Amino acid sequence: MNIVIIGAGYGGLRAVEKLIKNKNIHITLIDSNPYHYMQTEAYGYIAGKYDICDITVDIKQWCIGFSKDIKFINEEAINIDPLQYEIETTNQTIKYDKLIIATGAKTNFPIFIDGLEENTYGVKVLDRAYELKTKFEHIIYKKVRHSGDKKFNVIIGGAGLSGVEIAAEMAYISKKFTKSSGIKYSNISIILIEAYDSILNGMDQYIINNTMKRLKSLGVDVMTKSFISSVQKDKVILQNNDEIEYDFMIFTGGIKADGLNDTFDVEKNKLNQFIVNKYLNINGYHDIYAIGDCAQIQDKNGNFLPPTSQIAEQCAQNVAKNIIATINGKKLEAYEGHIDGMFVALGGHYAVGNILNKFKVKGYLAYLLKKVITKMYHYGLILRLNNGYKLRK
Ligand SMILES: Cc1cc2nc3c(=O)[nH]c(=O)nc-3n(C[C@H](O)[C@H](O)[C@H](O)COP(=O)(O)OP(=O)(O)OC[C@H]3O[C@@H](n4cnc5c(N)ncnc54)[C@H](O)[C@@H]3O)c2cc1C
Image 1 (spheres, protein in one colour):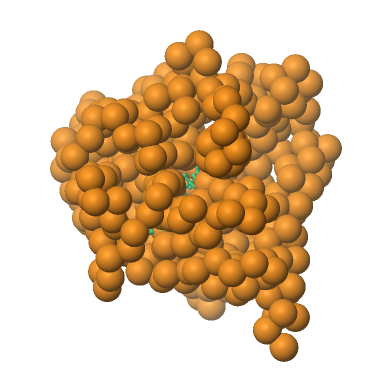
Image 2: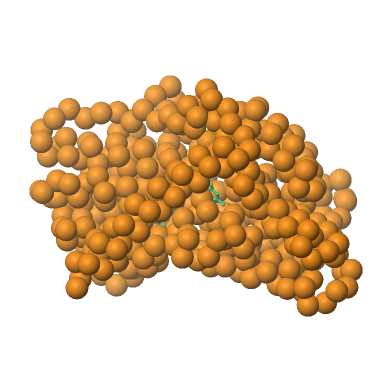
């Protein structure tokens, strides 16, 4: 059976790992990028805590690391023909028996906020994260190079998980410079702007309260109930007409699925995510699955699940299991998504989180737990990659 997976993100790679074990399956993995981008670690990369090798893994080499062949096609998928069971990429047409769409999502820049997309950066793609890293580093460099008192403002629009993590890490790094190199770093202001009346809207109150405390202790200026009405080249204008000048601005206010989702004419929600059934099939197409951020994922009670890597990976596992069940003539299992826990990295060796929504943790212990989870994920990929080098020799 030929399985094609579009997207080598968290969901796509997990699907490969699970499906490869079956000898009757041939896998083709398609991604427009040659690397897997660990978005969950982007906050540390932007603030200068991690290098690019800490957040990317070469997909081709990772595929070679399996003892069985996986065909990796480094091209963009641009169209799906569900009647012909074909995918068109920028360079070729590929046939499938079963298709898994795992193309993720992009930053959503609402069009009613004038100037937002033109003047700000998202972090969902590596290119933007790289530009942000360079900009932040440049501010630090200017502070080291010139001992002037110039004030710098970094604005982060959107206090969800990614916005909060980036704000905390940047504030932590500039605080660290203040300690080692003097007061001139203290006038780098990190301003976090949120339209809702709380940061981390919808998350557990323990996480919200402790995140708020930590942000305050790092000197982040948190502005809730503040709606951005427009963005100009060097300033943000709020709905109450307040203006805030900035040196650069990051926008993490939400996501939207686009690209392939635009070209495939099936039912979608307001964020352009595919609507899927309990087996994660796109409605009407039992050989096409959509997983992770590109789809609207619900738990067994119909509650929407947040777009996270853990949900993308869970979806991948469920789909792989069902594809193998189909081959073996076994019963299919509905996806019963659940959040196993959540950790928010809050600068330096500090995090806050919960495990199984029961055990609350904060501080260094939470940081260590988060670190173990992300390191295990990264090491798993690196081990496979190194195996690829050995197999090639
Ligand atoms: C700063 C930040 C912090 C985060 N922190 C956390 C966290 O702590 N915990 C957590 O669980 N989640 C976190 N998330 C969310 C998490 O990163 C996403 O939910 C996750 O990446 C979704 O996985 P995915 O497989 O659906 O898509 P992605 O990981 O986005 O992968 C999609 C892949 O598809 C490829 N692609 C897209 N379109 C095409 C096409 N047309 N043709 C070919 N290839 C294509 C892309 O190149 C990409 O490789 C964070 C996100 C950000 C930005």
